[in-house]
Amino acid sequence: MAQVKSLKILFVTSEVVPFIKTGGLADVSSALPQKLQELGHQVRIVVPKYGSIDERKYKIHEVVRLKDLTTTIGKKEVIYSLRSSFLVGSKARVQIYFLDNEEYFGSRNSLYIDPLKGTEYKDNDERFILLSKSVFELIEKLGWVPDVIHLNDWQTALVPVFQKTIYKDNEVFQNIKTLLTIHNIRQQGIFPKNNFEKTGLPEEFNNNNFALFNDKLNFLRTGLKFADNISTVSETYSNEICNIPEISSGLIEEINARKNDLFGIINGIDTLIWNPEKDKKIAKKFSADNLKNKMKNKEELADKFDLKFNPEIPIIGMISRLEDIKGFDLLKQTFKQIMDLDVQLVLLGTGEKKYHKFFEDAEIKYANKFACYLGFDDVLAHLIEAGSDMFLMPSKYEPCGLNQMYSLVYGTIPIVRKTGGLADTVENYELNGKKGNGFVFENYETKDLLETIEKAISLFRDKKAWEKLMKNGMKINFSWLNSAKNYVSLYKKIVKQ
Ligand code: GLC
Image 1 (cartoon, rainbow, N blue to C red):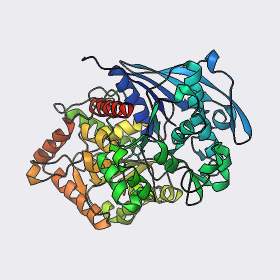
Image 2 (spheres, rainbow, N blue to C red):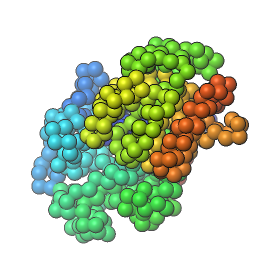
Image 3 (spheres, protein in one colour):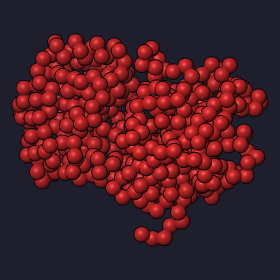
Image 4 (spheres, protein in one colour):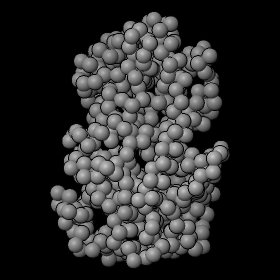
């Protein structure tokens, strides 16, 4: 490897695989730090220790210097510790610190939503103010001063403003730069304006020019103002949030004000976990040269979902949060017509109640055509990617999306709407297969969704053309290497600023 100046990166996030996961952020928070470290940089991660993280299994241990730290949230004094473990990959071993506080994290298994009420925890602001403040204590107590603090989403977005206000006189923090990555601009961390006091920020920030937005405390918007640079998880999404008000979720002006500091870097996939030749979670490994084994996965998938296996009928897989923006409103409206086609559909995921009800009913109504598992199951997710013929992601917006990439490398043809990272990774089948690796539709309309599924089913009958399409996808390299290198260039640029 050419000699590179090694950077120190502190990666702050609210979820990391394999410890805890609700979405793609957890995959990124695991794979990217490992890749950066493989490239010769020093990375450490900070994440809350939720009740469901198994301390024994992950050997999370005490660090004397980081025990019983105190901070204030509003007028409240809070005591917490940072405990340590390692994220162990095949090549890299990344140090990870767990923020340990019983009241805010340890006593709760769920990350953001109160499972009893089905709504966000009322004190999410306090919980993530604590996460943000702990970052400064960690740096100071360890004496490990990063070049860049890499922040992710609203949960960590107050770090830059804290650095520039509360901690500004502390020399230790003065040269640190911040990068805020937006994985989803819709989640902003919005709280009543009276909660401003909890942040501990100076009173002159208590207005719509700084910490408030539309008279509410808004974490992400504050982050957009104060982070040294901003990134999102695909090029197309970074353009969309600048140009399409609905996608920007009200922040279009704020984003445009930072346009020169905004970058789009597509996520990669963890090829140790998502690789059909080595996947530990599927019984029959396969590759572009051994597609017979993919069929065995299909058989097992049909069996798991109690569908009658028929090699001639395509199975469409879906793994998703069940919510409107993932395209479920479109799907629901088209569902009956899809069920009239010669196809089987399997679904894995959880989400809005109305969709749980809809799909539970549909499973009965369309026996042998549709089946679902409304929960989390990682092993099943791998089998769906391996065994399905097609994979459906009709998202209204999709900052990056990972499942379409997993699908491509598993020879499972993605059917997607042209938005965000889906637009950047799936290319529409055209010119008799000279171009493309999947099926893409542009308008968010039922007609377009249905027609595109029909197109895919009709090509599926042409065995040769279909196999060619599968192979086009299977040879793409989505490994994190390129994206991690792009992050390194960005960090270097920020450090020089
Ligand atoms: C969010 C986005 C998703 C993206 C993931 C990781 O979950 O909705 O599109 O892939 O973050 O960046």
